[in-house]
Length: 204
Length: 204
Image (cartoon, rainbow over the protein chains, first blue to last red):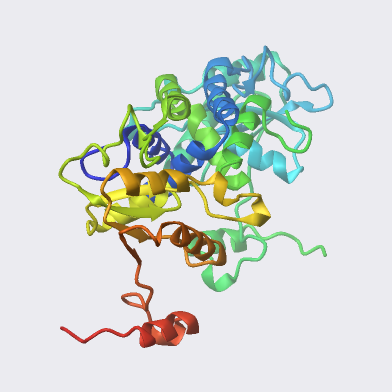
């Protein structure tokens, strides 16, 4: 038993581990640990091994840094995708979000982070040289920035832009504007301002 | 990649496993799987092994069926607790809840379930003979029912009561009534009715 609660140690170990996950508090962690305790042994072993395998067997695409089982990732090895367009994103999470829209058929370049002096992440820590090499060697015609709008995302986009703007490519970025379903009253001023100044021809 | 989404298989396996946990939807499961992907390998292995160990190494107290590392559980082997009182609960979860109140210093008897014909759980599937044996052999003077108030919990309590009522012990149960902080307007009629008919002398 741990001293400050009434939970047997084996259970408490599992609880503590669940509680390290984002958004999981101790109460939920206890519920999950009790669920594991009540689950068939094979299920728990399957669960545990899927996590360990994710870490042990994961490989990254040498081109775009996407997770890949072996060699080039499913995007880079898919001849039906547009290999002349590369979308620069911060993380795999962003790739999944963009893929879910079904609106993009080019390739990706996953930075794995953004330039952040406070966190000690400089340009050299990101695969920017690799991006330049892809542009030069792989016949890329357009680079799309899909980075977050914060200071760090914009700094990163600006830095990369300086590195690639002399190359014979088009550089684009996500349009920022009022979202579908957003109530104008609650849209922040920066977004609404940009949305008006970059207004588009009405074409219903 | 799985066919209906854009998530690499290794990641999707981990996602699916997280999604089997209670209260974890696919969106949260993806967040947790990505967290695992970004975590140090040692942390993930530690997490996985804590779950497997919970299932592999868990033992149950031969007296009360509490989780125990070895032999008698911390309750049954604690001489400072009142060994003449046994509280009958459905699960370990209930033990933790009662212990958290700090109001109980006796022992427990964990049924691991309640009589539920629909789920095929009969009296013989619960450790009721073991409870009778404890009463007869261990000098138990009081049995407290702390079972849920539903039909099944009450059936179970009634069945056990019939088995032990002829023994020289006191049988008690949790008092049911209006909770602290409950607004009378929203208390169900059964609870409020019982709380009035079983009213106690006001003693502020």
